[in-house]
Length: 284
Image (tube, rainbow, N blue to C red; front, side, top):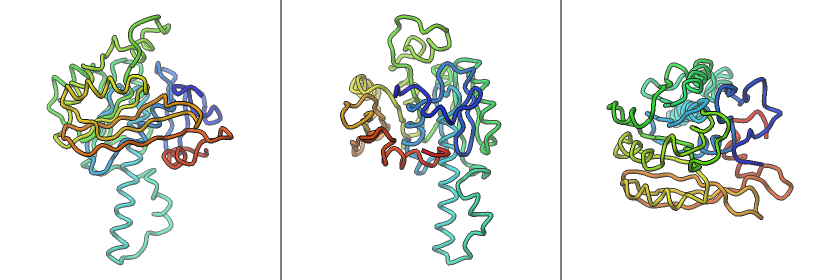
């Protein structure tokens, strides 16, 4: 299965993809819902995060996934706190909402998505407006380099599924060219913008081809961003890794290396992939 195609056509409906807690329309976006974005939204760390930036948000998929995770984490924290305090357990109605759907994010949580292409930015804004977490989310139609230069905002977590092909044969539309080719956002400019926008303890999470991961790590180091985690993603046990999930921080620290196999020997989604993404799908 190509990594940039939708995961399961059975969950598609006119112009979009149905997740467990939200719907993502993508008919006006160059890049559709696909495995890369889902991996990034499920893998990026959210512990201690209150301000999130999704660079090149597209349809808003990754931003919405992080909103759901942060809402669920808030509910889980409250549940554990109530258990430790020996108070009454949640009611049946509260348990039904304990997945974070229908619950707003905490007032301190802010999620921004920056998108250069106007049509995609408009669709992302519509997707967010239709979600349970719209009051804490905002889409900005702007170039990320200009945004980083102009704003004083800083973020605990920045995520990006960046363009990774050098300019070459056109994809067919200007919007798809911008989404796929580094002519619209080169990696050095992306890393510089991320460094500027991160809090001192913040993290940058990326998903990209494994073939260019070492180059990105080297560029990031020159920018003052330290590699903290690397996950090599392969389609199955027989194939080499073809995607990399990378986590950087401005502060140095221990680096963790892991791997993820998407499908098992009978071509079903692996237990590890289902464990990582299970909260988002109607069924695997």
